[in-house]
Image (cartoon, rainbow, N blue to C red; front, side, top):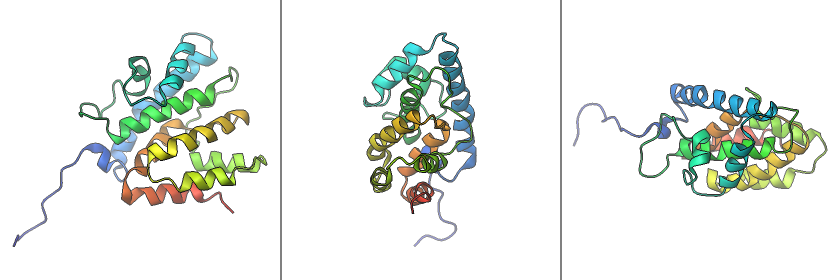
Length: 196
């Protein structure tokens, strides 16, 4: 029988990202300038067209498998160094790929907008008259970010068609929390608030 306080369970930062605002803020501080630079480069017609193509092509590949995509989505993250990708790395990989699809073909309007949450974008999309209820329900029935990613991609393509911007860094945090049992229900609840 053990007396005294329960031992503190040490775990990687990503396990705590759902409830630790410091780690979430750390990711946002790292990711948001990257999304902004990527977007500015694309909208100004300078250097990021090929980078967006690399991010789109790597979206369905294993996290970290493409060094050109990793340059934007992983390099410099605080969560690096594990044998397999952490949740935050995987979520970041997906979020940067989703941004590349979101911005595709739209050289005049920014699709990354800081502070625009996924559930708000979903609500705006639903208000366009687009029939997306079935897609929303499938997204809400997913159990982790790997299952959610293809549905997010379908939604991102619809957001692109309707010029609805999104904060992809916040989406990455939602995706990471979706893989954590004690925060997954909260993410699904946030996303489901748009359903009738």
